[in-house]
Amino acid sequence: MSDPCSFSSPSRCVTKHLNLHLRVDFRRRVIAGTVELTVEALEDNFSLLTLDTRDLNVVSVSANQQPARFTLASKHSFKGTQLDITLPFHLSRGQHVIVQVVYETSPSASALQWLTPEQTAGKKQPYLFSQCQAHHCRSMVPCQDTPSVKHTYYAQVSVPKDLVAVMSAVRDGQEEDPEDSSRIVYRFRQPVPMPSYLIAIVVGALESREIGPRSRVWSEKEFVDKAAFEFSETETMLKTAEDLAGPYVWGQYDILVLPPSFPYGGMENPCLTFATPTLLAGDKSLSTVIAHEISHSWTGNLVTNKTWEHFWLNEGHTVYLERMIGRQMYGEQFRQFKAMGGWKDLQDSVNTFGPNNPLTNLVPSLQDVDPDDAFSSVPYEKGFALLYHLEELMGGPEVFMGFVKSYIQLYAYGSVTTDDWKNYLFTYFKDQAEALNRVDWNAWMFTPGMPPVKPQYDTTLADACIALSQRWTKAGDQDLDGFSESDVKTLSSHQLIEFLSLLLHENPLPLTHVKKMQEVYGLNTCTNSEIRFRWLKLCVRSKWEEAVPLALKMATEQGRMKFTRPLFREVFNFNKYRDEAVQVFAAHRTAMHPVTAGLVAKDLKVDVSGTTAQ
Image (cartoon, rainbow, N blue to C red; front, side, top):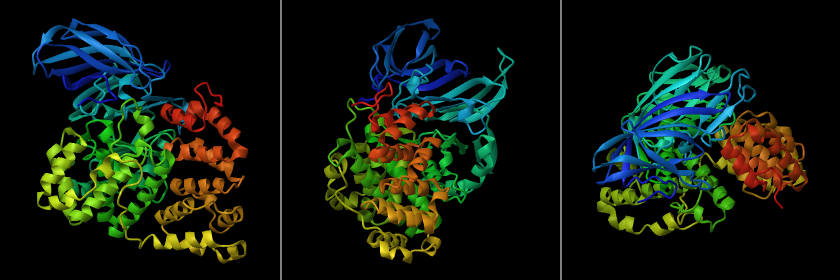
């Protein structure tokens, strides 16, 4: 099957290994690179290698050290540019060739974010980080940029002496750059085959602290001790995951806390999970994101979706595994509570896209669709809801986790489609085929909107949140004196998040109510980003003008898309402040990650040049 998001032809040949030489140039904001791809032919008479690129300047190409002709096709809107390399000889099926490409990235490469010293926590040194998922690796390395192809890699990275480089691989030493004594070369090896979207690089004024026998946290020194505290349970989570899913094969499990503009909560790059500083709540309450990224070590990194249309295989299973880790660590009620919250996130995504939007299918068609535009909580939460539904049908969490572990072992080191997964499900549970045949597979997989079955979750931990939210929605102005600080004293931060989420699913509260809520609960001073985000959304929706600058501040002082996009949308929908939302975005746009900036621009109906489209 072909990958609609890639030009490369993985049915004709596959990359087995990449050898990278990268020189990071902060002044010009480019990486000068040489990559040697070890490619295996899958057919006889093979002589045309097609690679994915985007905005790369290709200098020269050779095959087994002989010059090779190459052509670059015209640029596609989101797929980039097809690079066709004509080998100076033909290969038979099973033969290998080493193709060397010398190239340079563009300053606007979509995988790379170059930060000025002012955009970092330390304010003294520049910083570079990559984000290759889903299809951005091609702007950093010419490659077969499809998750259906997995390869090992080795890398040598030359950076200025006062900076440190880390990658999604095991560190393999460092030395002074033989060509330039003001630089250091860091070496890395990744012996486990993985897809191109998991290649990651970070260069900055980094420090690290050991937090476990196979884990360190890395960040600028401003965040490093906070991060070491916040993620101190990492080894417990890793061991819990191993008990559930089998041995951890990647060796090291480090966490890198990025500068605030990182667009995601976390990114599961092997050996080096990326995390947003918005997780540093000070009370470890948001460290479940790390349980999610740890889970990806099995579902996503070890067993990978074959194309982005099957993204739910990565994310649905990872959410399932993350919540099983939560169950082992904090009990079944906690898992049920998190699953309820996930169902609400799914409703939000379906409402945002529209219930008939084909991108809310569990398995969407991405023919001519930019995978960035398809990104939402649908694959995560609709995927989880399906797995939870099957768990209930097949005999409970222990029984179903047995299937998940077996599926991981069967497909480890490979890439799979939904059909592969479903066929194995029917094989594993062959004695219960009748129950499986009653599942409305078409409604789950290929029908937009909410799933056909709503699970009944245990509401024990949610009941207090539901009761308090109903008190607020039913209260008249004369009842407001009945609220006090003690209402929320016994609620965990997870429950406070749920309380605010419930209010966001109702009609906007009257302005008098949100003002009273601030008076008794003091939520403006809360540093937990998940609570703060929902609180500010609630305030802006209730047209509290004093909250607008706070919402825009949160939208711009960090760049996590989960927060930044909805906060801008809320202010934009407050008619009086629509222009201000656009102006603040324009002022901060260059500090944002390119993917985030592009999506916020769409949300605010701003065209590429920065003016509001009429």
